[in-house]
Amino acid sequence: MAAHRYARAYIDLAAFQANLALAKTCAGPRAVYAVVKADAYGHGMAPVAGAATAADGFCVADLDEGLALRAIVPERPIVVLQGAHDRDGFAAARAAGLTLVLHHAEQVQRFLAEAKAGGSGALPWLELDTGMHRLGLGNAALSEAQRALEPIFSGKSITVMTHFARADTPTSALHEVQSTRLAALAGLRRSACNSAALLAGAIQDDHIVRPGIMLYGGASLAGATPAALGLQAVMTLTSRILAVRTVPEGESVGYGAAWTARRISRIATVALGYGDGYPRTMPPGSPVLTSAGRAPLVGRVSMDSLAIDITDLPGVTVGQEVVLWGEGLPVDELAEAQGTIGYELLTRLGPRVPRVLGRRSRG
Ligand SMILES: Cc1ncc(COP(=O)(O)O)c(C=O)c1O
Image (cartoon, rainbow, N blue to C red; front, side, top):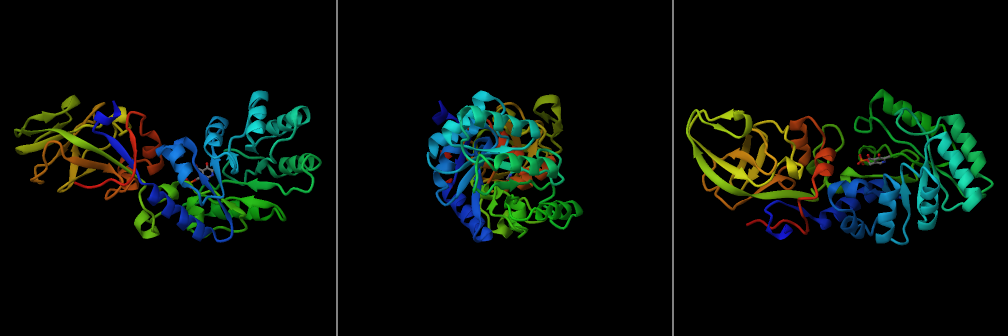
């Protein structure tokens, strides 16, 4: 079925590897754990993890992602950022050799009880809440957890992680507060930096950095484009033109008659819609890249299609490929037009769009 669909997302693994190489350069001697949660930000966890041979380890959000990844990378470190929550989860993590992050006191207690009953498994990470107030232990709870883990993992050095709320703006007061709070923990292995912090050079005393979006070619540093940072788009989302029609002045296009032609217009209907993950709320005028340049979106996005105005783009015809985001049209640019971030567009791309490995060939 997939082979007959017009919509596809090309996944350029060479671009991913180049972005990873850049992350490694920024990280210097620190270990780089590639963040591949949410199906590698919508790109497909299996091919991405398979291509990430230069990564020193991986981070995923939850246990199910960790277990799926373990089947792909049997030997390498996998950190489960939300940890485990019940007996089955702790047992599964132990059996698969997954590194759990412990981020609240009850979870620490649970880990200790399960370790007593079933064996310790891998040395967990502890998360410190330095100011984002999403997940993480307070300082006192962290010290307590450290003391409790010491007899089980004697001689092994615990990694303490934190997550920055404003890494994209490293000069912000909150970022400085979080950095200072983390720096106060002397003598521990640390992991704090995501892409933005890494690109900003805020690597502090990190032993392990955790880049995600930059590996996929997304910019996450305020005011910087991916190209300026030397990043390449990994996903290029394309589809083809299903139909072209001439719409008389005064006639409307699409649901709700939300767009009306102010002149005789050539309108192309593209085979991709919100049922594929292209937001229905994408504002009119948002760009779609055709063979002759950018065309503005007109009217409302339908479930399976959207319409663009190609009046000023002669030569654009039925069957031609268009780019919705990726090469030549950064996902961040489109996301900004819609009031969101590239992360959301990438991770919400639906399963209906086949991921095709390789770089899109034009023509
Ligand atoms: C705890 C944690 N670490 C690292 C990352 C990677 O962040 P980024 O994709 O901005 O590099 C994320 C992503 O949301 C995260 O939640």
